[in-house]
Length: 120
Image (cartoon, rainbow, N blue to C red; front, top):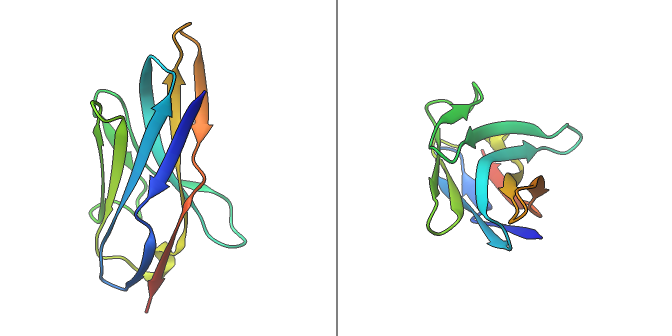
């Protein structure tokens, strides 16, 4: 079993910055692709950015140029640096990770989410 714990959310004014963290713990051999998703009230959960275990990144158009995803494999932690935040970035942000078990089985896990609120 793998636990993902997000942190770093909060209330920030438009134009401000936040850094989200997603720490993985539990029994696993490795963590493969990790993604940050967000879900605003009344809307579906959408991907924001992803990073492979090799460091390849992808961003949604709204995140390009403002957000940076990175990872520390030694700490099993993935970060999302968010700059130039806008009110429309307000959402619950979730971490999603694919873990490989010691039996080489791949399973996807979700964190509990962290609230990001951007005031205008």
